[in-house]
Image (cartoon, rainbow, N blue to C red; front, side):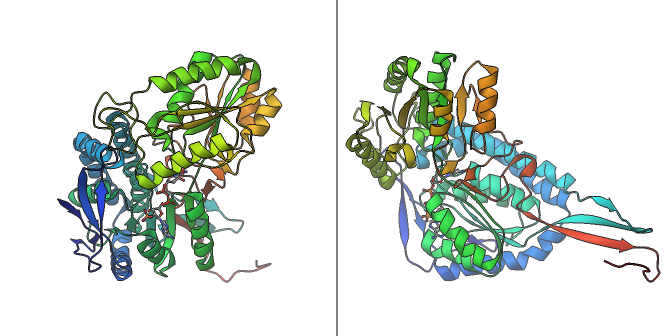
Length: 492
Ligand code: NAP
């Protein structure tokens, strides 16, 4: 059986904790893929110390030379695309098509960040004083802690690692405990790409021990986190006490607004893809359909038919369209919310239970679920479920649609289906989300386009795109006086 170890100061270590956790295939719980050794707090400390020790050398390495390592990493990810996708699908459960898409997105981000190392530019600034000028330099923070979730265990780590390393930071990377295999494989590829010892350290272990050590250790000078709002906001409070930069991308409850003049078949297809694709385990998943009353009956009829048509199955089976929930905890959470929806009085139109069938008996499969007549106060309309569950909220006017769509603590993504320019433009003006889509699903993103949310979803600068390196750099301002004389007049 494969054992997943942590990588500290250029070495794969044997943890002294004696604790391991099994890496279970969520599509078939009899299939144990491997086991991960869990690090101790002391081992996490040594990873931070290694990153601290490697920082000066990495900072001094010219940015384009750092970029060349990232370019090699992008090539390696491309060369290993199929292998990475298979591993991802096996470990996390998403379909092989979704896994290939994730690896490609990760590769694109690495490639983009490699290019950014050639324009890590500051600016020169004219002075009010003669023979004076100022300029700015972008500098790395030092050791950066990177803490990631399980739902995109390749794309999210690389969209933090690549900009952090490009900017000259050294890294301690803690992946989610239930996706260690993809994390180990990524680090192996970084090693092959030429990352120097100590610059990138991987610590596998629980959030409450190694995660907490990363968050509280004084040598860690910035933290980038993606995960639940509950953990992220608690971490934000802890990090604030140390006064260091913090970036978090957290939960979502993304609305799709469906207006009467839309192409209904397009709206149904994209809402279904957004709600049920990746088993609803995307932060950008469409979880609320806000539909105008006159077309609601037709909308629910069509979306129920679409939900029932999806083929559930192991992600590695190319005919599967929806994989399992990632683990027992997530599976039970989704089932619990299905019960909550029924108890709260929503109308269950399809799904609402564990999925049965040949080839999925031993996996964490749930049926794609649609609830109708959901009201904004119901828990299924307010709380992130992270499963293939869509709530339909019927509304009578555009104003009510906007009120309902914005009635959430979250603000990650949204979309509108309409062919009326004025309605679309008003929606873009009024929707409270960091990203919004017109006549397309709430999901998706591109490497060169900023990604992130507002409200209780996002803290700090956006990831990816033109903003990718903002979080990972400090600005130093330099004043230069080349008069060679004592300054006269009013000084300020
Ligand atoms: P999670 O439970 O919050 O865990 C995220 C990471 O934090 C894991 O590595 C976890 O480690 C670690 N962690 C847990 N407790 C910690 C602590 N006290 N100190 C330090 N680290 C700690 O989230 P998840 O279940 O993995 O991921 C699903 C969530 O991520 C959803 O809410 C989803 O919306 C969100 N997400 C958001 C985005 C976005 O861009 N907005 C993207 C993807 C996912 P362990 O695994 O060891 O517990």
